[in-house]
Image (cartoon, rainbow, N blue to C red):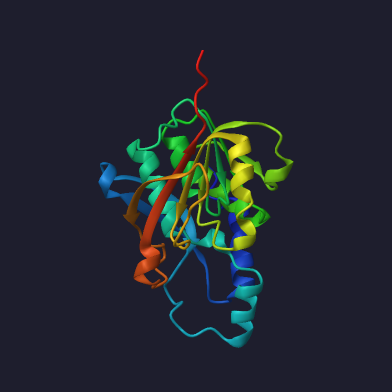
Amino acid sequence: MSTEPHPYLRQLDAHIQSLLPAARLKLSPLYFENVGGRSLKLWLIDPEGMDAPLSEQETHAIFTDPPYWSFSWGSGLALAERLLSGAHAVRGKTVLDFGCGSAVVGIAAALAGATKVIVCDIDPLALQASALNAHENGVELEYLEDLFQFDGKVDMLFASDVLYDPENRPLVQRFRELAEEVVIADSRVKNFSEQGFTRCGEMRAVTVPDLGELESVKLIRFYRSQRAMAVP
């Protein structure tokens, strides 16, 4: 059996090191204790050796081209846990994970029995990371860069922390056009009040690796919209 690393791993590692020369990716197990100790694994930035202050050049590089896919954000982790626990019934369904990043939500949906999982991100490196992580977890995903170029329909659409920028709020309408059911996980919008959505839970989750975020950001709230079934 070949021990050569996946080609995407070499590319992603090289990109991380172009931003932060001391950084590297590490295969990181994520455990979900509240769902029988189930786990999955993702290639994430290794926090070891990353505690030194960033140089001005490194800070500029990170803000110019942030590698969101190299972290598993708390909102995505929380949503993945809900999927693995059965809180959202995805078995046999077509699912879209919007703003997928590392694809933790999409992978969890596949492990929970979704028939088809599409992961969507405008960052092509996030789609490479998603493919690498899918390979590590033995699941198959489909990949989409532009949500507005998608002309199909899905049963369920999941989105995690994508509404922090007010300019992204029109995406909610697009979500509802594409999916019978939409679930949004959010830790940053304090007063989410989009028409048709109801709050369906909350939980605490911490980004991996831990960024030392404010405690308020570690509280993840879930909102759900579902089309009414037509009466025969």
